[in-house]
Length: 176
Length: 396
Image 1: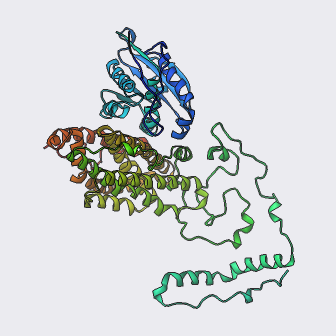
Image 2: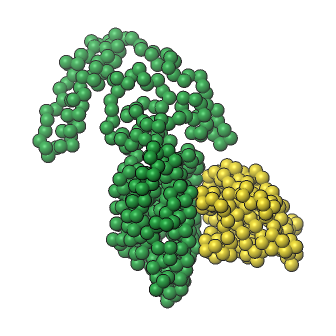
């Protein structure tokens, strides 16, 4: 596996980041995996003050890597409640409706975003934000059966961006 | 203590004035008309105080809901938490208290002495309520942000001239249009009786949101070069919203259609932003806008689900939407909006044609989202929508 890492402390509050310095020599966390999203959840708890500043997040967000391990889709659902992530679980295809919305893309797209976040020390390049990648329907597709539940993706967009930005706080390993 | 104050001893009100002072004269006349009512309250209280007596009637819990205590949930004490306490939680189907007496307070015994606020004339819950309004209110408070402090203004760098002008023109458009979503709820807010306090509270957050949006885009334009062009197409759309004949119709036009389209513009703005400052501005704003869209969708749904004659209500809403969609369209075809977005989307003035191709895709997507929200509200516009599914230039 190859890996990327955030290199320096994240910028001050008010920027689109909650990045932190990955511990030297710390093991890289594979992507995609439930552990990778749980690592993001752990960063949310560490950054409680920042999340309180951003405000409530109440939704179940799905993340799908279309070409996950073994070439099969990898699906994870992250449950946000108030200022915390209360559940991270892998999901089967038929459990998709549990999520308010699902962000779906191939591994290359997710990898480019994560690497950009790491290179920016917690702030992705302009063309690598969640909204930038999803607004036209590709390379990230936003799936939801209900426009009101889909709109939660917009209502919490800053928080969701900072959620993935937290990946700068640890090293990520990708399949070769 | 001094002698009790008698009605006859109260200083006489000023004499009537000429019509040039109509407002003040009307005010004086109004209170003169009700003189015996409020003066009787004043006299009774003044006499008791003069006798050195306390009333302590407020300790009497007869007719009160005393002792039924609200319990906080994990996130504090929300409106939903207090509304779970019986007698406090249910807004009336039709408001009959046209004053400030709080819902759930001991108020019946005072009804005869209380004034009527004639401005309170939106009396039906159907015209206001949305099942998500308390959730949206709490969320709005929790997700407020500060356009002065939360945007990394010091990082703003000058862009190439065409991109800077396009960004500033987009910011000018948004400065021009955003506060209609403050003026519209403000226009209705004071007409809504206090028994619908949750709706009034949510509308107050929308006012604050829109003040912030107007502020942040004005600041962005002036920090980047300056405000550019206003446009008549925007103004007609704003007028159509502001002058909507009912709260539900205006909320549909403002929040479901207008704010839905502006939400698309904010998302596009984030996508095509050329600086991290602009990214942050648009991302923050789109969150607020999505709350307003959510209220607009669910308010229309509540109205249609509860109105006495649903078919007649649908007919009226369609009639209204036939006009509203067209007038809103006058804004979303303005060169002062479409062209700067196309320039930013294409990457420069020389690439405006490419940008227009991208705009055509965004147009179709935005209209489809509008139709989905209408469907969600139980108001299908798919067969009747007067806005073309394809952008006018896409077919050219």
